[in-house]
Length: 295
Image (cartoon, rainbow, N blue to C red; front, side, top):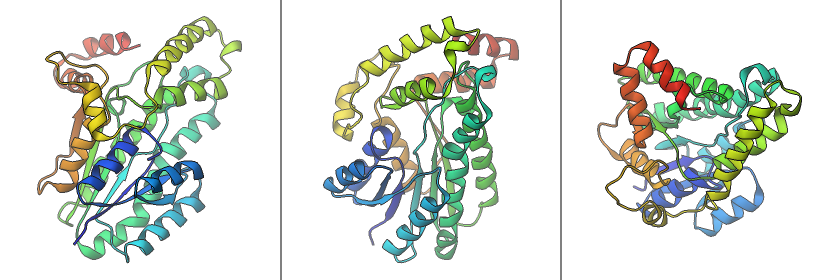
């Protein structure tokens, strides 16, 4: 029987590559996006599509209903992936902007997951995979809203894993570091739209950060890398690569959904692995200095 997976946020980056990659492995992939043009693009790749906006409860409910209708009430795996990063110093972060970050990165994921869990309980099996971040266990400056959303996601995910123990439903967290995608471009747009940096006492710092983000965004690809393209772009050199392609996340998703014994955590990129080791072994003061250097 063909296994089914719902992958969210597939208009580019991790979601797109994972949707194409899982389909090539024989999975029935239902891919989500917000914009009609992106849904048409995904349908052109032979993927089944459903519209989803994590910030809209009605859209989440409709998505869950559509997915269960398409799969006759059965779903083998859910990959929560769609999210964005809101830059800005905490002191300049309006509360409504922080709330919007949590709606998209935490509350929407929780809503969708709890709507699909009954189907997994009914079949006594399933995989829930969350695309978290290195910033879900080690904070970095200027990213307070995103840090907080991913820390919250990790807490919910850990709790869900404990509560589902023995149910046949496995829960995993993928924790990427820097991955090639449109993430930086979207973060740059969110900074300009939501942070009044021109009237901030830290405007000079913001101007520097905006210039850095613009440079990174200009170097990022269009965001539509097949798994093979992603692997070729990254290459197989002996030196650690700072920014990996989305195929690195796909490798983790494959293990999390197909292994008989999936890991609770998948740490992607050497940046994430180093941060994990630092969290485990370094004294608090050294961890703090390391986080300061991540700015």
